[in-house]
Amino acid sequence: MFRSLGVPNYRRYFSGSAVGNIGIWTMRTGQAWVVLHLSGGSGAALGLVTFLQFAPTMLLSVVAGVLADRFDKATLLAISQGAIGVIGISLGVLDLTGSLTLAWVYVLSGLLGLVTALDAPVRQTFSSELVGPQDVVNAVGLNSASFNVARLVGPVASALLITLWGTSVVFLLTGLCSVAIVASLVRIDRGALHRERRAPGRTSWVAGFRYVAGSPVLIGLTVLVALGNATGANSLQVLLPIVATQVHGGGALMFGLLCAGLAVGGLAGALVASAQSGMPRLRRVVGVALAFGGSLLLVSATTSPVALGICLALVGACFMNLVVMVNTTVQLTPPPSLRGRVVAVYTMFFLGGGALGSPLLGLLSDHVGPMRAVLTTGVTVVLGTVLVTLALWHARRREPAPEPRTEPAPGGAPCRPAPPRRRPRRRAGVIHGNVPTPTAE
Image 1 (tube, rainbow, N blue to C red):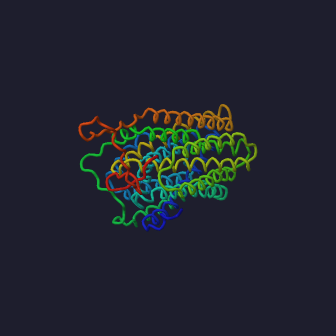
Image 2 (cartoon, rainbow, N blue to C red; image 1 turned 90 degrees about the vertical axis):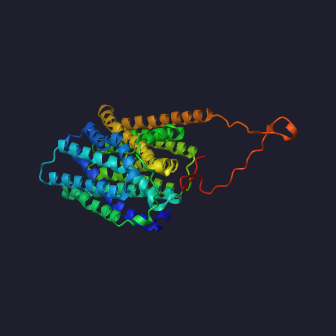
Image 3 (tube, helix red, strand yellow; image 1 turned 60 degrees about the horizontal axis):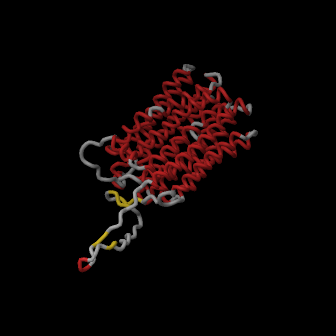
């Protein structure tokens, strides 16, 4: 489960990334709390902030994919993480001086979205350079585990800091946490990275779209995860402050604990996924997606904070397991020369789904209440999973069967079918370039 930590480069990056992720989640929790108070408890305002954080991904992730395939990923990540630290410090200074308004939160959220759009595809494809293709599944799972540990620690720490000293300390802490990941990236041994020889000439961003468009499985999985992010998981963060304050009458601490419940499940789901090897089976992906939709239905039926926390843990486990499996498939399917751009297309729809779903979920909550909004998301995920599964099944049935080969019989006799060729055994799968990658079933 933890074998990638035996690689020195990955161990350096993992330690710095863990601290940086805690800082980001601490900042996001404090940001949601500030917006909740500045807007008078508006779900639409919370949804708009989330939209601004993820909307630039729909426009800029393909550019980031081209950059990931052309330039040094460690340098690009150091720049983006430094920018996130500057945004956090700016929020802290404005809050400390009493100058923080809703407009400033919107502006800085948009800037955070721009940086995230350039950071996400580079960060996701960096794992394959750190550990090599044989441990990509494990590295992706451990990255997701680190992300969910931060989602667990960040909101709770943020809630305690807000209760004791206010939100300005939360934002300033983000700047300090970004130093850790920048320092780890500087210490990366470039000579030990598993880099591919880059193709000469221009790197076209259109190639990523063409590759995804030619694979029904990649299309279906990308739609599935985008739908999950639009209707639950990250978009669910929009509703948790409202549920904590308006449904259960709690405060910042209850909000932090509910976020922690979601993160505990996400951590468990990521660790379970990291223990797997090879390309995930499609039936397993579909089963986890259906379980994710069912867990959202359970959340909508809860009446107590304890039951809500348990159901949120189930939501987090199912969703993160789904994300790790799809992320692994997206990284291992294309050739290395296209990996950055294909992952960028996936990231565009994945984070773009959250950007579009968050404001809609906030508006829905204002009109029908937060728990009915969650019920709507659960039904949508289940129906969407069924439709995607039927579409993939239909696409597989339409694939033409290979024509039987024929070879001439001795003495001019009519041709007869040739005996089937035995497929050579392969340990790693199809070879793309110089890197073996597992094949999808």
